[in-house]
Image (tube, rainbow, N blue to C red; front, side, top):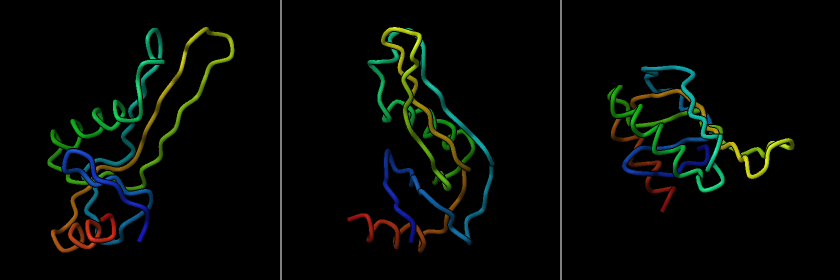
Length: 101
């Protein structure tokens, strides 16, 4: 099973789950600009959690994330995340939770 973490009840899966029902492919979140150095990956996950809630999804599969620093800007950090919003059945979620703990 791919690496999985849970945040606010949503599974963030760094890979594919074959039986997942994708409800919204290729979503992304990006935080940059003034004050972005105060942001974290958690802020990116908050955006994706809100997208899951509005799409009735319980997981972000194929989750990718990271941060970049712009060389020409002072204190300009960009955090980003992307993936596919999906619905997982309860058995799959339970298996992922057991691996997570």
